Image 1 (tube, rainbow, N blue to C red):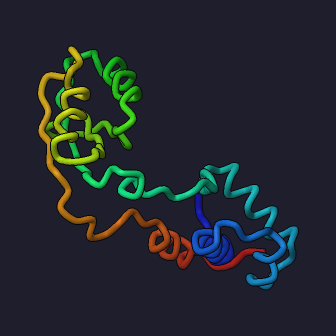
Image 2 (cartoon, rainbow, N blue to C red):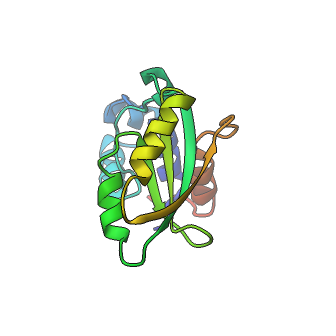
Amino acid sequence: MAIDRLDGRLIELLAEEPRIGVLEASRRLGVARGTVQARLDRLQAQGVIRGFGPDVDPAALGYPVTAFATLEIKQGQGGDVRAHLATVPEVLELHTTTGRGDMLCRLVARSNADLQRVIDRVVGFDGIVRASTAIVMENAVPLRIIPLVQQASAQTPYRP
């Protein structure tokens, strides 16, 4: 779906101030309250805006170690492996991939020693053949979406 400049400005505003109300957003964007509400409803219905939850830092929760594990899966075991990994709280993300591995997961742990426990739990499942783990040294570019929103919205002029 294409977003226009107003959609982009609205998403940026919500990213900067997630607790802002529709009325205040309409005032700041210089459009009617109904326009903001309609845009929000459309963006949510089309899956562009997926939620308004808190942005939680695992390190602040006591999980300062982040790692990525590339997993090789036995043929036909993908569903079982997904179900297994969904039971491990330290698995924050799981992606199926092309290339050397079949899945890539982002893990967190309380320490390097605790990371061994997490990895043992992850790979301690019959459907996983092999795992290769890389510990994150620095998150030089944290997850960001706004530059992508700005690029996407700049390509489509405002349409009231």
